[in-house]
Length: 291
Image 1 (cartoon, one colour):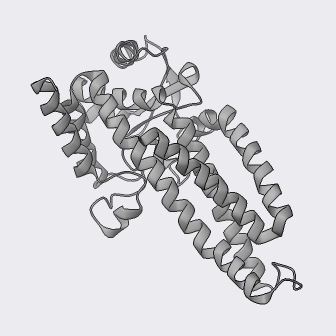
Image 2 (cartoon, one colour):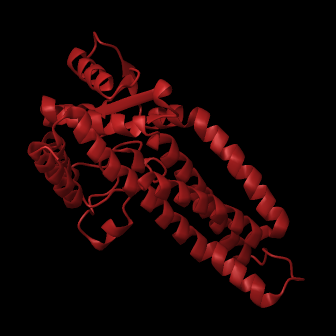
């Protein structure tokens, strides 16, 4: 069900981009945005992983450099029936982790030095399993493309806003009311709608990755315990260096904000932490009862 939901949301997001192009530039603008979205998706497919790893200054390591971490990723990748991904470490005391890559054959799992310090072996295993679930279901590519489209819509909205301020924008031959409505749609409605669609995609994939991660590591309670520690740490640590609105959704916990329980949490790329933990505990109860 979540796969179908994600597909429909991605189609809606692409359609919104085309609609913004049409609102801002008529039929020609819609065609330009269609072509642009295809080109952007192609670029995201091939290069998004390299850009994300570079943004976070993640360094690939081998078995000799971090044998316990490398061995843990290797063991869980085998359980998930995945090729061995690249293993990367980020030199940061802020605890977090993410996965990236266009498909399981070209994937990377990155963890900060901070997360290795505060989690025990089983808890770190739960986090790695969560990230491998993203790899297995190609969530990293979906989320990156969604963020790219939403970012373009936001950029167009800013351009339209400045064009309106300085007297540019739609042709004066168009109907004034239609032009005003189109401008309103481009500047206010479309960016907000794009943000909400992106959040819906990100949140649904996080719930799925928690569930699948609990199955891969065989211990949902270990992942739940890890999330509790990460939630506590996120309120006391500085934002993760390199994090931005375009890549924050990749991390297991929001690297930019600690506003999980406030109104601002409604607009977070991640579901409420307490909901995630409650679902994992229920999953553990079901696994114990044999359901």
